[in-house]
Amino acid sequence: MGWSVAYWLKALEPRRDALRVVVIEKDPMYSQASTVLSAGGIRQQFSLPENIQMSLYSAFFLRTINEHLGVVNEPPVDIQFNPSGYLFLASEQGAAMLEENVHVQRAEGAEVCLLSPAQLKKKYPWINTDDVALASYGLENEGWFDPWSLLTAFRRKAMSMGVCQCFGEVTSFTVSSREIMTPEGELTFSRINYVRVHMPNSLEYQPVECSLVVNAAGPWSRKLAEMAGVGIGPPDTQEGIKLPVKPKKRYIFVWHCPDGPGLDCPMLVDTTRAYFRREGVGGNYLGGLSPPEEEEPDIQDLEVDHNFFQEKIWPHLAHRVPVFESLKVKSAWAGYYDYNTFDQNAVLGPHPLVENMLFITGFSGHGLQLSPAAGRAVAELILEGKFTTINMEKFSFNRFVSGEQVLERNII
Image 1 (tube, one colour):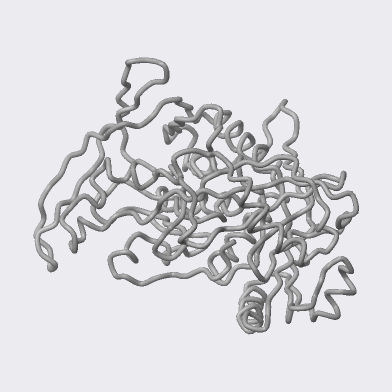
Image 2: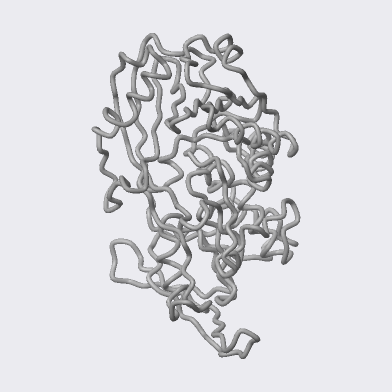
């Protein structure tokens, strides 16, 4: 998200070197970055028109990526896109909602088809369709790609355009405030003047003077927002409304099954919300499952609970794809979702009281695939004062003030 915003600011700036942009990264190796630890999927099968529009735009961007992120005298960008589509399965209880979602997706221009159990069995003979009432399949612009390649392409291009990279951790902000009487009563408005950055492996702190701060800290964006005074006021006041984003740990497992689904294997999302896709061509697959709220794993580290696969995921896999009754887990890792506890959707745009902090966070697991569109949206807001490509007003911080949820049904 951060590098996407940085790229778009330079790509859309009114004249060369009009903006000075710095990206501060506390994890230089991206060892805990949600981007590189994700499954790398892209889909238009959302329930919200804005998410579908963002995904369609991002798919267009990825198809023409070298026109955007190609650098002269450097090798062309290859994100290893695999256009095998997403396949969502629904039970009797979920069939009506799936059909509603597909109606919205088609209205926004996404190529999605509905499949009956018989059609599903004909297309994918390896699926057990016993308890499937309906399925939806993305015919184009869906599949998966290499997240690391997209991240490095954004970074390489942005730096070639003059963006500065700074390794260090933001520890505090220098803020100026003023009290203003409004119809709701007296409110404190503030501006960030300096960002204090702790340099790695050093006692040194570097102050960075700035006119705008974009909070793209993902799972840790709430902590960063609180440093600027967001949500630290009295409860039940506008100053006390916190950014409702927190880290949630998710596991991804890789397994081998020599007799498993072949090259036509899509990203399959089961009725249970367990998912998997093919990984390469050697009978390897990767997948996972989000646990119920009461079983959320500890977020203090990225250790993997291997029993979670045996007890929670494998039974669903073996039921849906009988050949998966015989498989061998090869590896596993964990990463963080920047989970929006309010409505599982993005937070885009400025804070109403901290006037020069903008958010691009809270995507709850579907951020990577939307990053080209979301980064452009925030850059447009900074440069033009409004969204011009896709209207993202729904995703503003103000919905936490009004209490109006913008719910996305298709969270995996």
